[in-house]
Image (cartoon, rainbow, N blue to C red; front, side, top):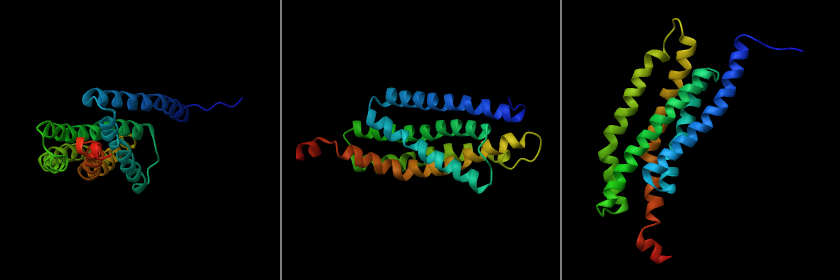
Amino acid sequence: HLEYGGTYEHLESGKARLLLVVPVTFGLIFLLLYSTFRSLRQAVLVFTGIPFAVTGGVLALLLRGMPFSISAGVGFIALFGVAVLNGVVLVTFINELRAQSTAVSEAVVQGCLTRLRPVLMTATVASIGFIPMAVSHGAGAEVQKPLATVVIGGLITSTLLTLFVLPTLYAWNEGRNTPTQRAAR
């Protein structure tokens, strides 16, 4: 029989581990979101940051002409955490405003304006921290470049989601469920 070894064998075993780790990571992130918000809708709302982050990471890999690797997979996992964190920061603040009897649309606008700086700072600091890895050429660059590329590209798209799409989805979702909207139905 034919059996491959060396780097190829390591790649295959790493992919098999990622096929287990990534779904477990998604599940844990979702459970933490649900326990934070105590709402399935809001957990799903914040979880929408992950597909946008993945899109940015994949596009960044394509633009740089890099294949998917194990280090890129690890970069995606790190990216999920930052993307979700930004969503949690924004939605938590909007919920606090709503608890003070602020209207949905006003809470969303005020929340976005107030949390703009923290969301941008989180994404910018993380991106700047990964730039040396993304442009490295020395020893270990083949591991560092894909990881940093995924994180930087994913943070760009997930930050745009957090600042523009997430508030829109929040207003649409929560606006449908206010007492006056339910009474109108």
